[in-house]
Amino acid sequence: MSYHKIMTRIFFLLSLGMTFLSAQTTRINLSWDLGSESDLYLYRIFRATSPNASSQLDSVQAPQNSYDDGNVQKGVLYYYRLKSVDFSLNSSDYSNELSAAIPKISGLNSSEVLPPDTTIQIPLDDHVYDPDDADNTLLWTITGANRLTVSITNRVASISTPSDWDAQETLLFSVKDDQGFEDTHSMTIR
Image 1 (cartoon, rainbow, N blue to C red):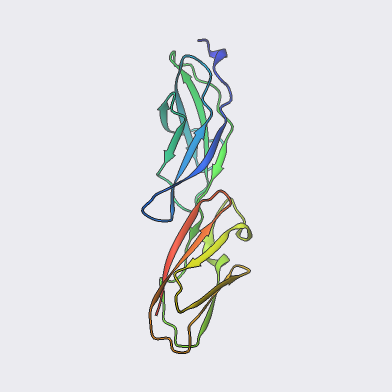
Image 2: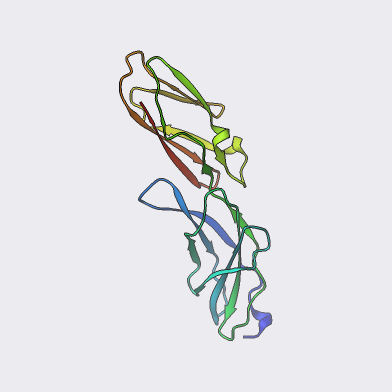
């Protein structure tokens, strides 16, 4: 196959990869359309933290058309591109470039000691960083409340203890972006 016949555009999608051990997103899954060339050998995967990714991360042999990038950090924007390669080692041009980031919760306390009949408010925007999504587009949830009263209004969490509070509960804060990437944080209320 000549160089000119190599597919010059590889379209691919980013999707989330979830571990079954926790609710946190820990990887970015890349998938793309298979090339139609009969002598397609492999795909080279490029990643960077700035546009025009040119550092090769890995490669996969055709017909595999997906790759799990498990070496990612929350709060970092990654850029990805691909190249297809035939058996003569001719390489295509770079594919279109896509970017993705996993939101990162930080600065939330892991425990709070609250007296009975007390309410605290936590501005959630102060505790998340997602370089490719505005704070007002992120979806926050809090689960795990039994006797505590918990709500989120305008991205401000309110946690209230009852008048007879003398217990402990662990709340799970979760933030998810529009691509489904998620981070979680546990907070114990005593």
